[in-house]
Length: 144
Image 1: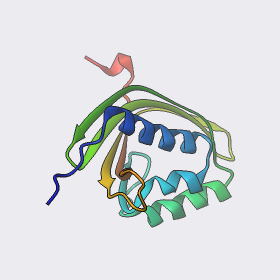
Image 2 (image 1 turned 90 degrees about the vertical axis):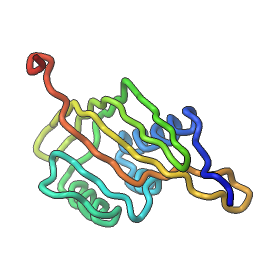
Image 3 (image 1 turned 90 degrees about the horizontal axis):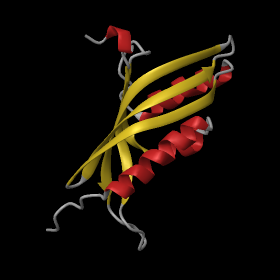
Image 4 (image 1 turned 60 degrees about the vertical axis):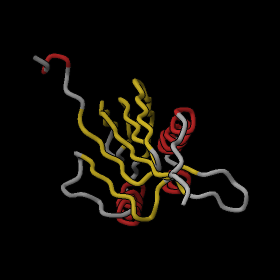
């Protein structure tokens, strides 16, 4: 039995960048392709956990139908923690969205957990996101 592959920092950064770039473009097809069907999502803006990708896709579609789109999304302070079979990626993110009723801006901390998927058709192993968690970033004045 082969030991699980530990992804490189660069591979994790590239996978995370693909997610952020697709989100920033409001490109749902590309964004959701980066997540496993069984991925879970925890967002401080939602009343409950989204237990799979399909639940988030339905929520996203409702937002878009209501006039929602991403205006800007900027990632900073990345941290990559690889382990055999996957990695944890955390960063700070500043996002502005159009809601159909005006713009809203957020400063958040985000965690994305990746797992390594086996290579298929001579393609190197791929990182796929299995969990995404957003937390509000406290204002500097809130820190003690």
